[in-house]
Image 1: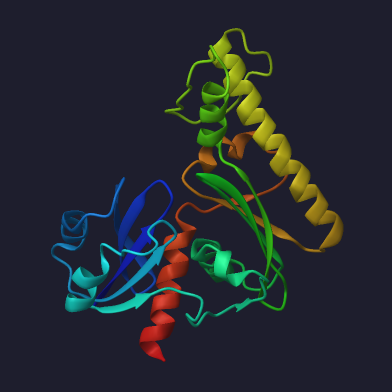
Image 2 (image 1 turned 90 degrees about the vertical axis):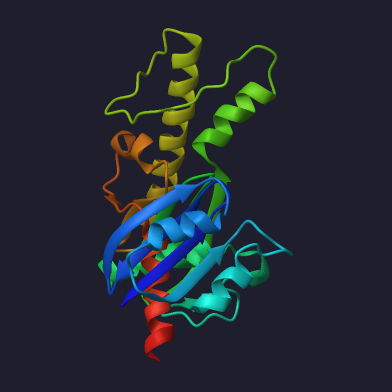
Length: 246
């Protein structure tokens, strides 16, 4: 029996298939599409589905399609979790931030965790030794920084990255390279600075990097980190299995 995971983020929609704890495959699109779900899950006996949605508000385009065919968990503030949510403004918290902490806890079961997700936004998500999610921080993601430089100036080009960098040039020798240097090294310096502050306050801290754009920054960080792409999917699968097995 297989599980289907639907992660609807600000920029991308991901549909994945798991067998138990084993990741099988994933497909990605810009918007929710029933055909994407059917294509991804074709050939697998899917009974249980979990959906995390930080994009759609009033109208849920997937809800009737999925609920008619599958045993579904549509995540919300009342979804049972293997961690305790101590965030104060729970109604404004994206469920993906909780899911990546659940996913990271599967790999690192004891130490306090700082899970940094680099996507549309860069989010810093802290889970203490008592498995309490306390919050963290949110800043602009890489693509958002590129777009802001283009949108709020008269002549700067819109830079789009298509590869990761083992080394980023400190001195950009073209306008595009200067933007890449400023955005990526600036983001790396921000992340390192925040990691340093957490290390000053929490012993035995484990730092985990995830998100769609993690590879653009991983090699520029001075602090020791562990990289795990798709932690949201792994965390959602854990949450789904908890609901199915209870």
